[in-house]
Every structure is written in structure tokens, then in C-alpha cells.
Length: 313
Image (tube, rainbow, N blue to C red; front, side, top):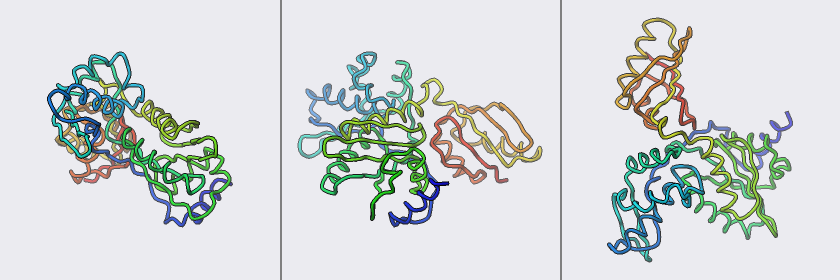
């Protein structure tokens, strides 16, 4: 009860609108990065390897993937995964990789894959205003590197004590108020920086640089949400709103007709729902196809393994 009050009070303190439902975000550009260098033939090997390291960190959800000895050969072969090089200003080049080739190579290397469906993270900064600009900049850069969308809360008053202390229930309640999937509180002290978070992968804390704190949270998310490459095209679909034989048949027919579905098998059947295993699609693509098809209401979520639908004949 106390945390419900704190959450409601926080809404008023921060001058926000009504509580919103959290919505996972399909993140574009996971396979494109900008690094220092140029696009000349003599530089492409080194530039593409450095760019691929950043892409692999994003796609596996592991900060350590960029220096993983098991992936040494993958980085040595980086140029064969490149689609385009684009020279940018100030000695930088943007490298775009073929997503299918990279994911296939990572699967062969027994790496888990984190799809485009990423949780929305709200960031709350607690510290002197003079230090918040630099912290925000570092967090934005870290979010870009890890492929995690960030939003920042603009506080108009002092934060509630429970939130400032990083209490898990207060963090979770605040995330719901902000309409986010998770919340990261960054406490900026005179001698150190601490982070407290709550979200799809549970709660956690870390102390260190802003980048170290963010990487700790991102690694936790990646560990929870990345899936085995061999399972990445297998999804569980739960369809509600099927109450008779006609609706069962209609729901199955509409699901099978979606262009991203290559095969399906029924796992369980109840009086009002179907649980189906499908192959041939990632969660983001299937959600979009189901919405566009017009016969299903699609729930939002961050799970890369399950999608919840409601059949609308």
C-alpha cells in the first residue's frame, strides 16, 4: 500500500500525465555502427572488425562478446559480413552489416541472440544539476552502443525517499507510471556513481562509471531476453477469444496465412485459448504481421519467445 502511495505521489511531483502501459520498442539499426577510420581498402579490415565487435555486443546482449576469444575468427572475417561503408565527417565511417549473415555466424558459434524487440528504459537522475548533463550524455552514448532505447524523466521536485534509496518496489511502480518496461535510477555522488534498476530481468545495483553501471544492467537484460540461435525462429503463440470450432479453425487459418509463418503445431487447447508453436519469424516481425492482418489484437511485450493474441473474426 505504501508504494502505491509513493508511486501516485511521484506522478504529481514530476508533473507527468496519466499512467501508461509499457510498450517494447523494435529497435532499428542494430547492424549499423559508426566508428573511427575511413573507407579506404587498406583500412576496411580493421574498421569492419571494430564495427562488428560493437554489433555483436548489441546482438548477443553481452558486453564481453567484443573480446570473447571464441569469436576471434568471426572478427577476422568481418569484411565478408559488410554490406556498405559510408565515409562520415571528422574521420569516421558508418559500417552496415548483413543481419542474416551475422546471425547465422553467431548461431554457428553457439551464441545467444537478442532480437530487435527491446525494453523501453526510463532513466531518473539523482544528483547535482551541474553533473547531470555529462551523465545524460554518457548514458545516451551507452544506450546507443548497446541498442537500448532510453528516455529521461524531468524531475520538477525532490524525489521520494523510497525511490532515491533504490527500493525495488518503488522503482517498479515508477516504471509503470512512466509507461516504461524498466527504470534505471542513477545516483550521482561527490566521489562515486551508483545505479539501481528494475525491469524485465529483475532488480539490480551497480557502482562505478556511468558506462559500467549501464553495461551491468544491459548484460542482465541480454542474459534474460536473448535466446539460442537455434530457437530464434521458434515462437510460442497464445490465442485467446476462440470459443467454438469455427473460431478455432478461423484463428488457425489466419495465423497460418501470415507471410512470416512457415509452419505451426498445436501444443495445448483449452475452452477459450490455443497455444501454438510456430517457426519462421521473430517476435517483432510476427507482431507486425498479425496487426497488419486485421484479425488479431496483439499485446505488447518484451518476450522474444511468446506472443499473446486475441482473435477477432
